Length: 145
Length: 394
Image 1: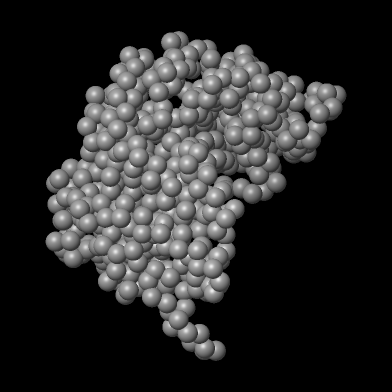
Image 2: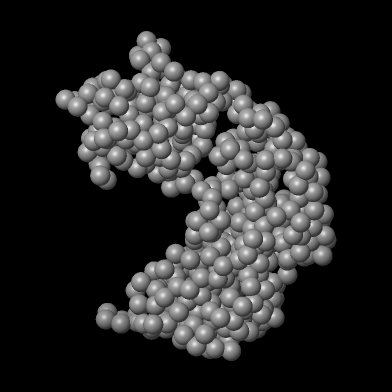
């Protein structure tokens, strides 16, 4: 597998743009996600209103894959209901674990499909799912604050 | 790897094994396999002999006074846990202090946290300077009459620094403390003599010095080991067992419950003989040349921070921790892996040191004598290209 399938322009662009890497105003949920094996840390902030994610952002430090994956995720979940966001997370996990391979099913993941080949890099799977796991915990209530 | 020749630079994590080691293990299982110390038949006696011969080889190799001071374990972590649970929990008292460098591997740090918590003792850290050296003032100031245990690595698994163990041990002994030495990172690369270094306990793993995984050693001074309660109990470590009580076997069986990893011990003996046939002098010369070559090359690469610096070559093993500006170590490792270069990236089981260095993680390239200049060339060449992969300026 070629690395350029992973470090695509989307990843590097997301990683460098910092478009979604910031605090948001009046978050209703703030949750930290940690990869103990490497020290990647992100803090996810969501503002929910009537079951809809009005705004989202993240801060923290980590590798290109964890940062870009979190950033792409934020693009995807803004304006979605929490149920839709959870479904996206499940689809993303399914793609990374190679359990969902149907292109039509994966379409909803849009740019996040670029991370599909991470499934061939077992050492990096944790990086790709860090943001999404944090989102899942934030929505389902395993909240720190 | 990935269509490239493997450049293995993760020797501090585990080494590769030479054929004589693999053959020795296979030979044991093919021709001498039986449960040692138990059977009354010829094959068991032979297996026992092989196991005890391996112990004798280890004892001579590390300069132990007696074979019974060598306890076989699974690895250095288990050895250090044995000391913490059996010695630490028995002899450390409230208000005592345990001294250790902040650079310690978790296996020589977390067990002491457990002891300190359980007994109301305090951990006191020694802090290395920017070149990785421990200062004499720090050592003098912190090792006091309150000190019960001084636990330290002979060589740092992150910085490659060779610590002045002998000097620290002398200071520790002058205040009546015991010295627990972690030689996992030193013994593959340099001679270790427990008596010359002044170790009361010494731990190492076989797998970092070309032996199979799953065999390690704890050396302990006989009089101290005799005063310690068993760590694990069960078969083979007893003398008499009645319904309500038991008495324990003498050393070393007291600390070797259950069927032991005899194949591993045989493999460790073969690895020791292999190391001796190459000779530490040659190993150190080769590694120093490779280290100099790698550090010279790294000094010329922009946007690179080498922890401990590139000029500091003395008292340093072939372990180089570094960070590439703006690139997370995991990305560096993945990018190098695409060229077949295997390095470690992460906190290297030394998170307090990461906090002290103010980094989340580092990359680590670690050498062994079988590496070549060509390996280093490929490593350096791959390193130069890392930032480009992520669209950053070279």
